[in-house]
Length: 277
Ligand code: ATR
Image 1: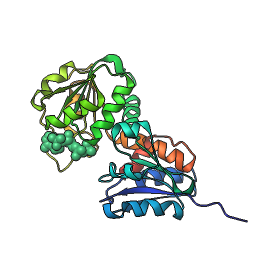
Image 2: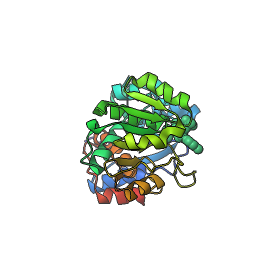
Image 3: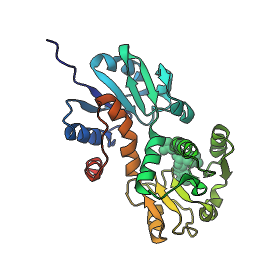
């Protein structure tokens, strides 16, 4: 009698030791009693294609992809979801029959689900969203906000040209403003999102002025080390609803886990604690 194969998944990046995904998926595998494994893999760019072609033969059902490979893996995909095409990067690969690769991006989904979970009263149509930063994370955030029906995204980035490029890709609902104007745009926003690395432990603080924050605004930060960033502390003091960035990491992992291991995982306090270990 043939034994069923033990499903394997993992995360590919370089460096990878800091990744919290193995803690998270390991927690879910244990919680649901699934005989599978989720493994961190430090893969050099030159080895990326060879590794992706080999993993399915070893029993891998898919992988997450993180920095610096999220854009590069698109070249090796046999099929790419619409949202991954729009974002221009993939964070979730699903290996199908004979090793064919489906590339998806669940970062925008993770962002919006975390926002809805942490700020249940937030409505996309409530007003403009002020997005700080125009890197890869901002692309995922903006795609999900536009998709959710936000009337306008006010986009501010240190390097204005990068913000202009995003506008070219996402269209007329994006309004680009200079980085120095970000503080004065806060009062016009229903939602403020930091997608830059500023405010992360070991990085400079976010130097934008937040005097305009008031209780009607929802404030969220993609940075989750520390859990309460300077931006979130300013929001809390101003009476805003604040949503930390750890939840985005948790929610973006849900679709991959469900596809690979066949169970849709719950996000609760135990999940948060597992990812913070
Ligand atoms: P990610 O994929 O996490 O978005 P990224 O593509 O490297 O990473 O983008 C980093 C973002 O943080 C960018 O918006 C970057 O601004 P620039 O486009 O001007 O580089 C922003 N950022 C990083 N360090 C910054 C700093 N010291 N001041 C202002 N913005 C900064």
